[in-house]
Structures are given as C-alpha cells and as structure tokens.
Amino acid sequence: MSGPAETVSREFWQIIADVKNDRSALAEILEKQSSEELRHFYTEFLWLSAQLQDEPFIEVAAAHADTDEDEADMLSEDAMEDIANWVVSQGKDFYSEVLHEPELIAKYYEDIHATDVGGVAAQVYWARFEEPLVLDTDLCDEYDGMI
Image (tube, rainbow, N blue to C red; front, side, top):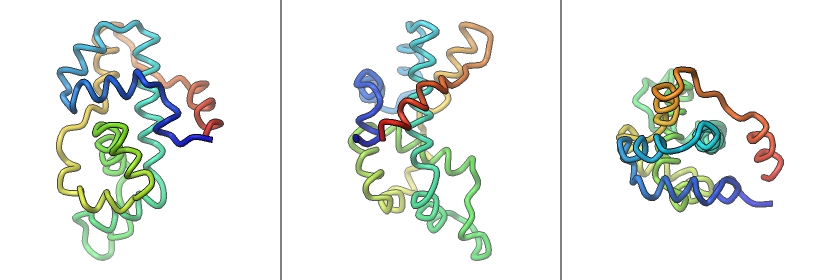
C-alpha cells in the first residue's frame, strides 16, 4: 500500500507545484479544465487535506494554537482545515514530510496562516457552472481503499 501523497494523481501534484501557492495562478489553470477535471482536482485536494485533520495532527496543532490553557487541547474544525489545506498547498514533498512527522506543523505554525490554495476549485466551478462543486465520493472511497 502507498501513502496518501502517492495515491493521488501526478497531475494534481504538478498543478500544485506549478502554482507555487498562488491562488490566481491556480484559478487560471482550473478555468481551462472540464467540469469532471475540476471535480477530480477538488476531490484530491480535500481528500489529502482530510488525512491531516485527525490525530496526531490535531494534537500537535492544538498544542501550538493561540488558545488559553483550558482550550489547549481543542482546535476548531475550521482552524484544522486551514492548517491541513496549507500543508497540501506546499506540495508533495512537504505534505509527505508532515504526514510522517506531524511535529513539523509546530515548526511552521506561524506560516500556516499564510495563503493556501484551498477553496479555489470551488470558486472557479461556481463562477463557470453556477452550482456548487461536490466531492466525488467514489474517488474518496477508492483512495481510502488504497492506503
């Protein structure tokens, strides 16, 4: 079995590498994709992000969050999603490193609130097709079965 970074398509990681965390550059690429290609990209992005939104990642992120001691073991779902999206946006190598060494989240915690490319596919899809972009749950199930 392979890990999540190897499970998604090479095309996905190439797009992430090409845009270098630039939302406008990603939007430009995605505007040229078909409805199905957009849905595939969106699903891969969110699936990868979801792999980082549970233990041990949430524990590491919560330990470095700006919360008082009573909330130190809690982190909102939105905050964890932002962190995971940022990790995916950094590319395959960084994603793989964090996957195997969750403590890296702590090292880069200050950078995490910088721009990520999460949400761009949904925005482009809405602008082009005037309907919400939905996950390809069959693809998620397939990927889940591969790791």
